[in-house]
Length: 530
Image (tube, rainbow, N blue to C red; front, side, top):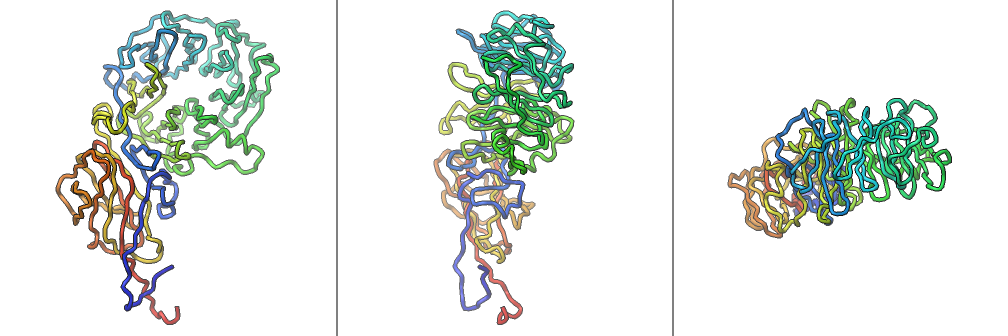
């Protein structure tokens, strides 16, 4: 409860803290409404299972190419057959392969795909299949590229392609935008446009945007304004397959945003939210739409360029749903949002930097080890460098193509349990784990407004208190735990206090932030009538 003015009392200091960051970024509401483990802003951060906010891993360039926005990566896949593993990309009107995982690209003759046009690539029957709008489907067996022709019984010219229930499934033919085509079972070369095709929505004018193989024999079909499920029973003909509408209140905004996340499908919806198919499916009889997964960070999705939403691309990798989007007035994708499913769907905020402009993703298993690659709008392929644990990863693992990574972490607003009283701060203490950076800025956030001038720097002494401003360089060495404190007794009182932590390079791991303050009493005009 509020504390009243009483000259006879000398209150002890009060304490508040950001005990961990396990609740992730919640930026769509005011920071004084956040829970104890939620925070308002994270940039280039990964959250550990214990809620430590640490610098994300960097990426390395796979190949010698220089950045060129006129030659984006239109498709990327990993191809694995007995005795052969390859990265395969579509770039600059060429198909190229790399058997090393480090960027020794070799052109594959036999097909010239269109430039700057998404290309779907899937594997089945020990082959890669390529589908691009306006082109015949092609197959690659690791040695030869084959034009599969067109016109029944050859494959249709589609832009969406999946391998599910032991057959190829295509959609996105401009002349039949609501039609799904099926190949023969265990034969991707034989199709029938009449008996092995079905229309979803029966001519409702709503084109198919994406398809995702779901649980069992279900195929999730996303249209612009609706979502459907097709039950593909191999014992039935295509005409006997069951088609069920899930919802006609929402659709999908981008083909590559819809991916399998565990037993669910997450996607960028037509209302600029990230949604769960499972939630929609379970609540389809409800008059109220399920809460979007992206509600905590919805502000990060409000400024998407409506003309380029279709370019959004996602991947699910080691417990994270990564979604690349393009804000207004930006060139290609320039923002990746990360959601950590191992922490119950906590958002890790924004991953950004010059290389982070993904148009497509793929997960490789070279040598049995998973690795994440993405194809960029700059014509380069990048690999996330997460193959070493934190205690052995060198400084190079925290660079983006050789460039330093800026990390930013902000705490929630702390009111010390007294929302009405002003607080005169006494000190702030930062508890960090293994870190190695040459420059960290600590900035006070007063009543939700950040100072223009940071509390410059703090020295590296364990539990040493310094009075800001400080001008000595800040260097955190690789030690398991350090506590860094700054005296704040000279600061004027405010109702709420927070802290921004910004490292300009290297890595930092923030475990928690603690503050102490003297809570000032409320001064009443006539306390006897209170």
